[in-house]
Length: 254
Image (cartoon, rainbow, N blue to C red):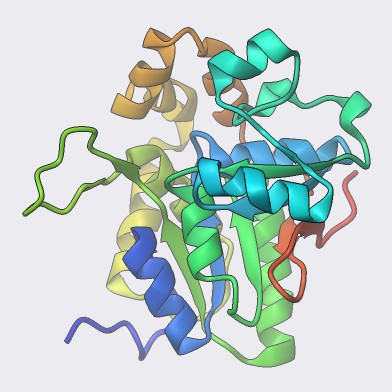
């Protein structure tokens, strides 16, 4: 059976990876560079309160129950003048406002793993800060760390197919975080680290040129990619509040 149990720091993929990390009780880092993770980081940097929820339609009812706004998709948000699943859509005017943010990948993985001892949101933007936070946390509670690359989904997957599409931007983000973690690394984690180390000087170009980046460019969201490809620009570390309700900053931003 597939297992990375003998290592302190692990890497896994998608909803199944998040579920397995939750079953083990690992400290779990969710990485969805384009764009859930980067958007949560940007929202908290601007003082907003983010509640993750996996499905948008159900999220509307959930938002009403907690007095929050359920954020729409990018095209609808632009018409309404509200933020969305885009990191550049958040600003200081959204400070202390409550938002429910849904996505098929990052938010879904966070929801699946919400009962872990600590659930952290990682990206290229805050990789070093996340690693520092998790190293300290591991010392305090003595639990392994699993970094989950969320990946994307095939739009036209057949019923007999796994619809998850591995995303290199998430692997690079995971590698950047794993690089800063203390402890033994699984082979899966080592491969992510090696990928990041080998591509460190080309992060922006690779995130722009990869399949997920090209998909966003085709939809007119070049600014999202430029923002998400930035490396270590903030100390914001989104940590899921006990009870799985909302994210709070585990570290004070500089």
